[in-house]
Image 1 (cartoon, rainbow, N blue to C red):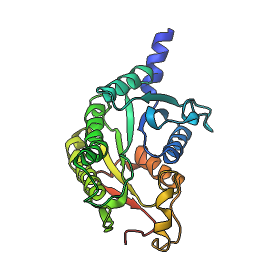
Image 2: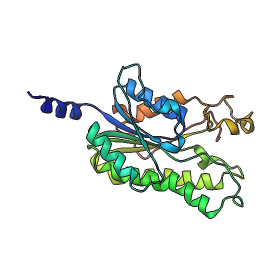
Image 3: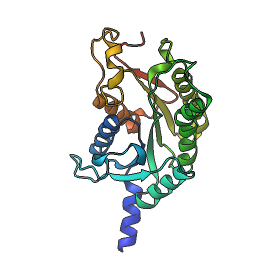
Image 4: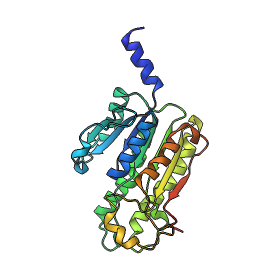
Length: 250
């Protein structure tokens, strides 16, 4: 058997997962957990958010290198380019994880229409485009996981736009789950509440005493749920939005 044949068989056998980024610390936990579970991981990093520790491949406990794909999301056509590069380098994805958008609270009076388009673009349009495009390359029986905050259940006066966008993602997941069910591709949504990340630290003082369990969540908790939804055990779960927030939305 020649080298080319070996490479084709390896590409077919391994489970490839494509991770579109959000919070650095949550993404890192997700990437490390999935690599530890034996996935070949391609992590997409947005260039304008990157810092030094994101410029190299991750070395995980499984000693598998994680492929870093850095992109400029202000340039058109970057999503199909990322998917094509992943398929070429690693093979068709078994799973995709999409961390939707940026965390931002603001009153309705403070949100300009341009800002609204940005929020909807990062929270809804981007999620839809990624799923639409990656599904054409995904084998039957694949896994699609979105990660969007549980602002759908927050009643704060400054969460109107964020709540609208995240509710749209939850509804989108239900519809796509039906669309892709014939191919046994499952689509699920994670709705974290307050998580101990650098992006959320500025909001932490406002959350004191509002979480029934008494603490904010940790990135590894989100990563564990992602690993379950991306794995074989979740084959009968689809169209679900799972809240993990310490009771914050109760």
